[in-house]
Image (cartoon, rainbow, N blue to C red; front, side, top):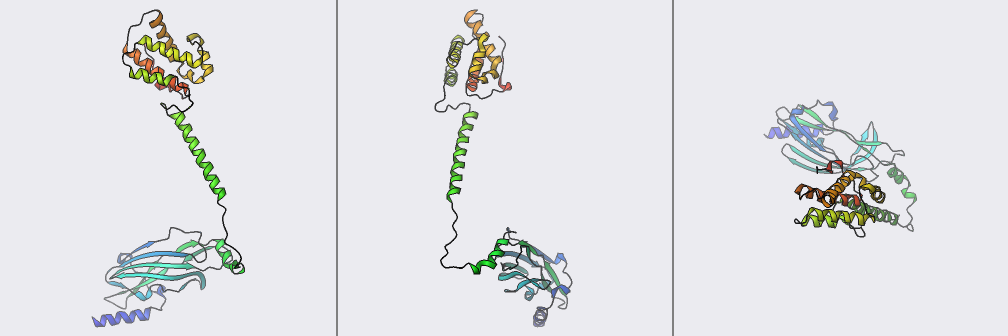
Length: 319
């Protein structure tokens, strides 16, 4: 056991400073890799922090070479050129063959033009416990981000504008508050309009109440007779149009409110029922006719509010 520990330690020291790319790749069945990338991929500024969490599990018979993990303070390079991204902190948790890394990078780019920046791929090494001479590598993919050109410009010009007499830059918020107030007022007004148009049983202040009170009265009074219902409805039609309306002068009602054209067939049927019940006395008390008159009264209310009555809601009965 002591010999194995010494061999592992020596291998770690020897391989710590070697290029890991020269080693063969570890088969994916011997490790499990999970990476949590930052949700923000663009718009980074100079000095911003980028965090990346890596969870790695190495399966038997291999163990991880800890010396191959990233080093704090190391600045990423690509083809020998500095990328302007430095590893600032490592939060490392190791439990047997499980590794949990929270890597914190900081951006220090000083390019004069905006172009994508990226954290290059890392290579972690593993060694076979049964054969310490077998060293393999596994690859952690790169992370591509974008640095804002404003950040680059600020990095160049900030030293030229550090006067102690210059106050902080303030954003005028009144114009945004005005937009919020106007938007809220438009929303409330639109809500009232929708309530007025789409709410069938609502009477708003100032609205001329003609047919809805009568409809509610007819719904409650089960003993009211058909002839009384006809007289009440006819009277409300005359009150609304401010004239005596019959089948021959329905155009006067349409002139007052064109929405009544939607129930023209019901209006004609109503006057026929009125003629048979009140004048010719040919109609007897009938529950179906009574229910139809109440429904017709509600349709009058909808037309009064200029709510279109659907054709499917118009039901005619035989008399």
